[in-house]
Length: 371
Image 1 (cartoon, rainbow, N blue to C red):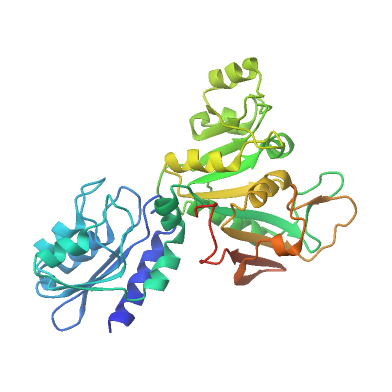
Image 2: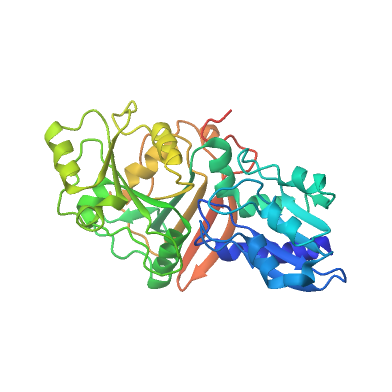
């Protein structure tokens, strides 16, 4: 029964995928002493009540002497909200079942506190599913860098535009809607200055699925070519981070400072582009746990060259572009196939005539050179 109800808690937790970050997704189920469900909840929004609070409030007095199943160890610290262990103890819960221990040293310690109060605790129920659910958050907590998702709309031959630069639209409306949905799940969207100059994108959330603040927009622009009339500068400039190297001219620094965007200088790599490791360190310190990289080709190439991509969503249209058209991933690339990073296919979905290819880095692979 623990396995069964923990799976239900995991299903509840997934409802927070478009609002919980940079907090983890958490679900909770409360059973009364007879094993009947009397309360359930999930963490819907960063800064909002935790799953345990929702579930116990719904259960009320029926939780006394009962069991609560939680997908992540209840927190023992006072952060944006009070400690969940206090709420559990106060409700008179007799037994707590946990899927995943919290690796965050600030929030952990809940299991020990509960046991010290004489409450029975069972750990590790559906732990693998719990880790997969929160892999983006776990990467940020453990490595202090965001989980990196690469997204692109491509043709069957791997092109993202024709030789003349025509790219709208390779995939259909259903694929584009799914791509916008990914923005709702991530804390920041990243593109290169080439995409800004060519497409002048808004880089916003538009589906209304995320109840939190608007998404951060990150522009990699080594020499600060982003114009003042770009949408990402004109609209909510405080949400835009323009990252450059020491090669940027002083007048362009002053120009963008006056426009109100956040401007950050970071080290350059051997190609005089923004060094990806330094970028991820910086974004991780900002509290960005999940980063969506939307391209273009050189930007995707920089991230793959740095072996910094954790997850891939490629939306493939049944067309051939051919010629000297723009490929999805440029950069330096690998010299031999043995050097190529291999990913696991996790899901494949149809969106009308298009395919969504969803790949993830194997869990046992080194991430961002963390070893």
